[in-house]
Image 1: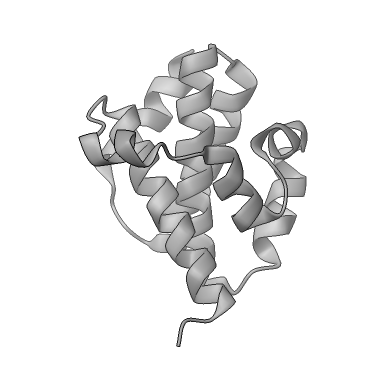
Image 2 (image 1 turned 60 degrees about the vertical axis):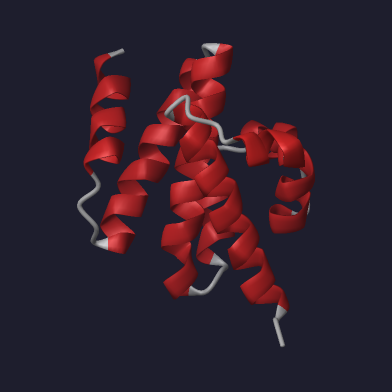
Length: 128
């Protein structure tokens, strides 16, 4: 039996993977067929849409993530990094890119994973 937390974690990972493919400009046909609605996924995960999430400060978002179980935080940070990075690139929004950098750094710290693509994105954002 799947619990709400497991379901939410699965949604987070699904959204993060979809964003990763969009960032790498390699969207799969199946993603396009599913017509992933990011705002509905955001509402399922956070109970509000990206517009509301993006209006919050980094500190407010970190507080929201810190209310989750510690073992799940890395997944939230990775998803948030991808979400803000993708939207920052598409909308040419430096505030979103700054948030992406913060969440990517928190992902690296909490996961203990050496992720070269994420390190490269952090360096790319830092150069701007």
